[in-house]
Length: 365
Image 1 (tube, helix red, strand yellow):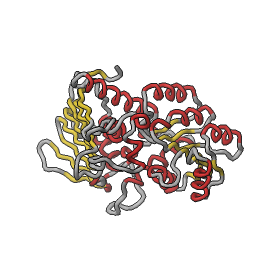
Image 2 (cartoon, helix red, strand yellow):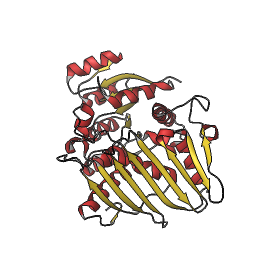
Image 3 (cartoon, helix red, strand yellow):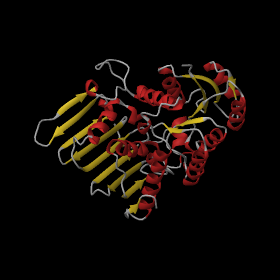
Image 4 (tube, helix red, strand yellow):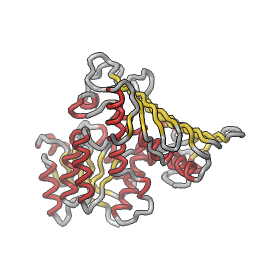
């Protein structure tokens, strides 16, 4: 099969996440990146495109969407790797042009943008995908399979955490600048990493909390956006949960973790040891499961040859390629609009609860 012709919005020279998406898209040979609106500045856009060897450069995503849709060799899908406030408008433009959209998370910066994007997705004949990359790691998919087959029994307790320390002080760089600007990010730790923890727990358990109580804080003096969020969760099943997302946890580099406790067993996964799961039966010793036990076969090298962050993105891109080509066998493990809307509902509910001194808020309100 010929590679899928891929475009990119954002991700110009010096951008972090754009480079990650490009590596992931190329890893399994399913895509060829041929066009981009890598910057709104024409000169920077052209220079970035030249660095990457792209055939076509645009400084305006609307122009790109219309021009590419009109070409016989135009792009078939586009990756949107801009700051949060610039997710909705480009995504809508390409959806309306009949081009599949692969968008970095969270869905958008505001509920209004999310609503507009949701309407465009539902009206479109093409697909929308959201890159929550951690759910594509092999042992996360194995954790999901274990839960689905009942290995834990009835889940009683859910604990998800995503801890970083890089924003403990004021940081003067491009990545920190937009993430700590409410106009560009919409939410701080809640949106940047909290939505990852939220989606991870939801993906593995299959449960969405019905209510939450939150304390959302700006720990660093003068910071205009949240950098720490502590959230209690209630599930309709009776299960209880907790979620902690912080970017001011000194010493934590990328501490994403998930712990589940059921009536028959407990399950633990940590990103920094991403190739193993700890399964502890109620009446037995802990078992360490490795990629040798992963039934999803979401890997490229034999067990014992570490894979990680980039490969998780690549797994998503490969699954997306299959869906675009018509194979929907594994589409349930690829995040899309509903995952994005759930993340936005989480952010809104957490903010609303915190504003009411931690009052319990129903999801969706």
